[in-house]
Length: 174
Image (cartoon, rainbow, N blue to C red; front, side, top):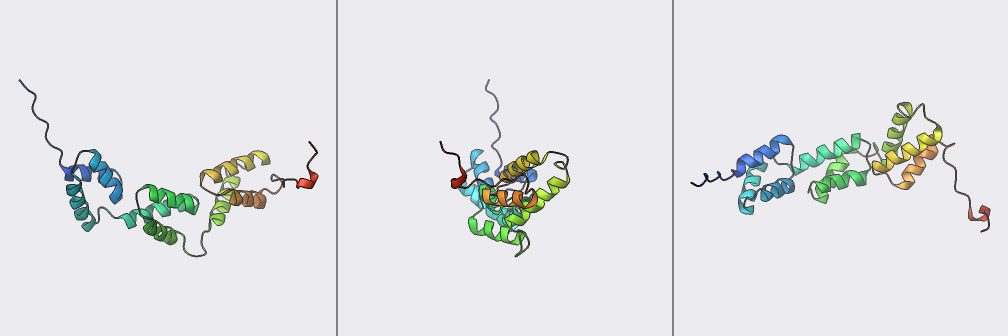
């Protein structure tokens, strides 16, 4: 006696199940439904319907991701990469990032300074200055800030911990 044939998966149920857990971009939903064996034509048709009902909205998702990562004091480049990693195109990512950082309100340097000040008032306050500098630098790099921004922030907030590099004239002879 053969076992009963499994019921074919319903594409709509799969899509809604995925969207119930978390918002997905068009690309993410397409990829996940394809990996479950659904036909691309059927997926595209369903995604168009879900878009019409507001259940798949790449602009809204990009805005949400941009706001979240700006609040986490991440650099614009890292935030843009996170949005692109969700399969959202560059123009949409750029618009979302611009909206999350209105003109003049939050440059990468401003975000890095704000994050560093918060850390220095909090859990880093009681540590030696060298440890503060090392940990702040590591945190800022993890949040996507470039070396120039990191150095600038450390020089501004912890000037005693940042020693300027010696000029080539003052280096010892080999």
